[in-house]
Image 1 (cartoon, helix red, strand yellow):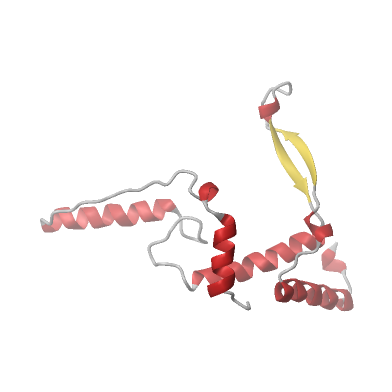
Image 2: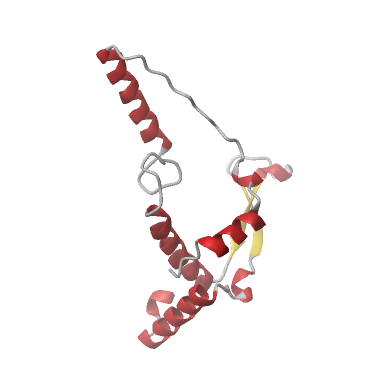
Amino acid sequence: MLKRLPIKSILRLVEIINAILKFHHFLNAWKTAIVVPVIKPGKNAQDPTSYRPISLLSSLSKVAEAVILERLQEATERHMIPYQFGFRKQLSTAQQLLRITESIREGFESGWETGAVFLDIAKAFDRVWTDGLITIQADNYADPW
C-alpha cells in the first residue's frame, strides 16, 4: 500500500523519518504492536511453547525501522574489525570457520605450529549493561547519521 502513496506523502514520510533520526525520538504510536500467538507447524495446540509471538506493527513504523537499520549497518560497518563474521551481511560464521580451517591447513602444510583459542560468550548481549553503554555512546560516539 505504501508503494501507491503520492509523491507528496512519500516526501512527508521522509521528513518524519529524518526528524526521528535528528531528534533521536521514535514516535510512541509506532512503538505499539499487537502481539498475536501463531502456532508452529506440527506442534501441539495445547502446549503454550508451541506458539511463537508475531508482532503486528504499523507499516510506517516498519519503513522507519528499515531506514534506521540501513543507516546503523552503514555506520557500524565502517568500525567493524575485518574478522567479525557473525551478524553481518553476506558474512556468516560458516565462512569464518572456513577461513580458520584454511589457516590451519596452510600451517600444517608449511610445518608451522598452529594453535587456536575459541571463545563462545553465550547470551553475552543479554548481559550488557545497556544504560551504561548508552551513556558511553552518547558521551563519546554520538553519530549524527
